[in-house]
Amino acid sequence: MVTGVLAAVLIGTIALATTIAALTLFMASGKVSNWFFLMMLATDLLLVGHLIEILSTDTDGAFAGVRVLYIGAQMVGPFTLLFIASYCEIELHPWLVRLPLLLAGLVGIVAMWTTGSTQLLYKHYWRSTYGSVHLDSEPAIGYHIIHAIPVVMVFIAVSLIAYRVKTWGPEHRRRLVLIGVVILIPFIGEIVYYAIRMLGQSSFPLYLTPYSLVLADVLLFFGIVRYDVIEIRGIATDRAMDFIAEAFILVDGEHRYITSNSAAKLLFPELQGLSAGSVIRTMPQWPSVLVEAVSSGGGGHSVEYETADPGSPIGQRFFVAEVSKVEVTAIGTKIAWSIVIRDVTEQRASIQQLEEYAFCDPLTGLNNRRHFKDLALSQLLRADRTGTPCHVMMLDLDYFKDINDTYGHLAGDAVLKHCAHVVKNALREHDLVGRHGGEEFVVLVTDATRAEALAIAERIRENVARSSLRYGDLDITTTISIGVAERSAQAGLKQVVDQADRALYLAKHDRNTVVLWDRTKSDDPATHASRPGGSGLSLGTGKSDQDRGPGTLLG
Image (cartoon, rainbow, N blue to C red; front, side, top):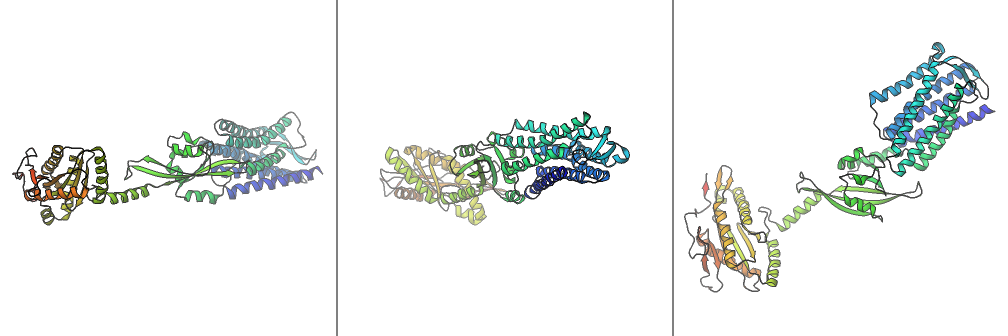
């Protein structure tokens, strides 16, 4: 009767342990689940061996059951320690630690299977029916050694759990404590049974370890179902997460790290060494906007942030993060946050490029004609309110067609870019410049007197004439003609540009000259012309030996 009850209990426990092992085999992945599966497999062998032992009808049958039992008993210790070390994210050296642990278990198995002839474990043994059917024996010295080794391993495993309990968050501490209790139950059962044997009770009626595993497995199954103690996730889920191009990170409401995919570890390399339950916001790389999004609670959030990146074409990288609340009802109601981060740098760069095309001349980088007009109108409105003077300049490169015809349009484009750079550098920070079309530029100078505006124009003319462009093995120099018009009160932009254009027409007669439009002398508007090398305000044509004509080339 007793044997039948014990056998039924063992069969039920074997079925439960097999179910737990199957869960980890088919629904989990990684080193943690691999060691856990092997630990449960060793537990199954221990229970099966003991079942054979109690159902045996003779000594040989009981001894065969004990041999099977010892395969599980000797390997459950190493597998438990390796599982706990992996679970606690403590790396053990494969050759110096893992291999000796596994070899110790194999030595115990060999000692058991050869004890019939070597008497390493039993001096002699017999089948006993006292209390329940079991193999009784007189232990040899090897018996004490191979029983002590798994006990020491389990003790080390429990110590690792105690170490991790101090550093992990509450949720993970709960799981660790539960696993620790599951391991301690058969550990205590083995120690009690061994102590009773050593006190002279050689025929103690019940081997406690297999039945303590009954309670441990029930508790473990409850922990898996209720608390997800080994964090069973589908292999397909893990692989799917790693195939997601976006970075995926899961944290709890206290900013404690739960899991992430490969893309997240590439974006935040510190995640590689971050333990589950660690506070993620302590990472130097972790954006403050994500801390704020999780702390604010509520529903989902979409936040943007950028980081410096010298290797990026625009010097920065831009990201959009979708932060969503996840409710898990396995433990009451647990709130977690999923964070999906997309790198939108390329999109931002494309938008910036489109904006530049909309506002800037693609060749020179200056404001294009339309954008210059918009900015200039805004500046004129501001000038009307403040009463500050404004001047418009029209600039045209001299003999530019000859450069294109002689050296090609690529050389002409290079000259345009070079001269645009020279003109922009000669202006003040708040002055406006744009490409008007072809080889023409337009400038708006605000908050400057007539003399100051002419001085700026003269500085542009001189800088262009003195500069040269290295193109292949040639040095190309050119000159520029400038027409300047002073805006009268409330005059429109088109009117002032037309006046500056008429002054430019006059400047082109002599070239390399600055001409000021005089609105009081419509018959002879050119009352001021700059002479190269002069004050920029003298009367005359501005001809000099510095004016070399069309695109002077110095080879």
